[in-house]
Length: 252
Image: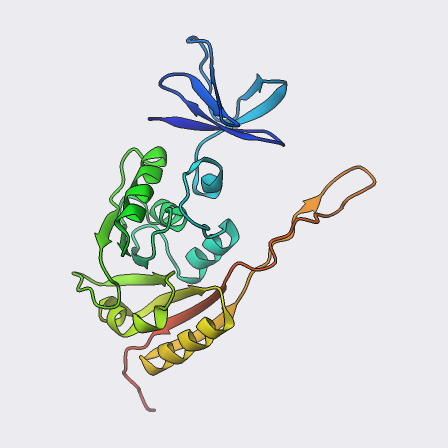
């Protein structure tokens, strides 16, 4: 199915471009068979005006089916930036969830890169694949059903991302598949997890660069009454970034 996103100030809908049917607020509407919409167009429907958009990674929460809380776009962007993920990168991810981060990673590495996701729950793999198929006509996602703390993988990875309950138990194992100088990110909601992550990384031969959290505050822009939005997500998770050391110490 090829889809487009319909987004207004109030609602988000999905347009199936094959059948020209719109799903909006739990209801389905049929457009004229002659109607052809492209990204950047606007559509007036049910008294509202919708902008037509491509289903890109930052719109994941608007179109995808979700099994749990997803990683928010601002955290996704920081992970990609701090892990130096780019065209051609080989990325190892653990914890598929619904595929929000996976979708962004595949977009970032392009056709010359590779994203491998290790996930314990087969249902999460199936859901992520369905969500990816909505966005990518062709992708080289490698999904592995297994435990990241014990699994054996082929090849080496430029970046490793751990979004699992106890990442510190997996660091020794993933280190085997991580290139020297490669970056690793642990994504964890609590201070206790953060402390254990940093301790385990240090003990396993990683240089911990930094740990932080990101809080996004929307601004309501109105003539003469611009102010911060009251609806703010106060905390998502703590992000820890580290670099795998080679073990070589040069003395001068």
